[in-house]
Image (spheres, helix red, strand yellow):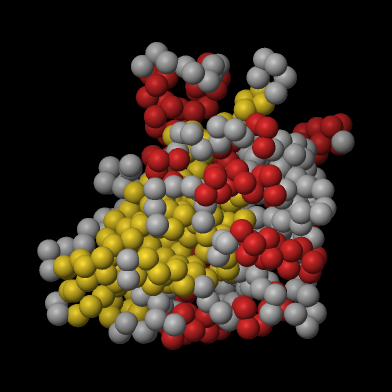
Length: 446
């Protein structure tokens, strides 16, 4: 396996040299394994093991568009808030052969106060949980998509003794890794623990029973969809078990989203958050097709889009749109990819940089009308630490990137980073400010 991987990496490096400028920019692909031709498979391989793509599609103004974003959601003088809630969002919780309960004892130490201090703490559960089957994780060298399975013990790390993640999206490309039984087992497991979820379902009725979390008189609905199932079809006759929509493809039918928004509004939702497994892997910017899809989804009446799957963080956007239900112009929020949360890609250096978010939602009176809107946004850049220890064990934890660099610059080095490690941290910091955050980002950084 190691020799095969080394030969593949050498071949892809040569290919990248031959392709030259073309391989430096995002390209218009769907990134859907089921429909990939050989050229796209080679492109995917290059991005995943040689070099992640940090430049947007040429000639479409994408980099400038995100650099000039105004992410200020200040409530305004005319708005009188009567109640508020906070929603924290993190990226993908996956399964890995390199991440397990023994090396994640201090998983949340550096970010617990930010991430878990919210009314709703959400993330994407990117693998089934079938307790009677052995756990299956992504190996260090991965040439095919493994059939993942998360252990109940690792799930306990995610919920952090009841202080941690308390809402889970289950729609992603690994939803069917353990088959129909895996979908049912995962939902049964979450229900047994008392954790709400959305994205997969045991029945059609459950698919259409949009979960609403009510806190402080504010009703927040969650909907969730995935762009693919790793080459699998939905279960014949039971397509409702997985919310599958080809989100990366232009002009895709999104009538299921419209229907779920309608059902959420019927149940009295004040705010609708869509958790989307989409966008293009190993690329810093979303392609134009994905941006257009985000806007189409928001125009259905969605207020917040929380994206994942790309294995790297992608930018944020404030999008002004007309809400067909509220009958008014409003500001929505999109993050195209939060990046990893508990996951590990050894050959994707940019995957070590991710984001945690905290959104404030307020309900009150504006110009005589009662409305609910986003009134605050904070972001915490994080670094995924995976470090071999002298005793032969490993340490996996999530670090506050800016705090870590501040400590290093102050002469502290509690994680024994080498000079090469420090240079890599500084490179990721540069990527954060040059590509992921808008020019005026001081207001949103926690």
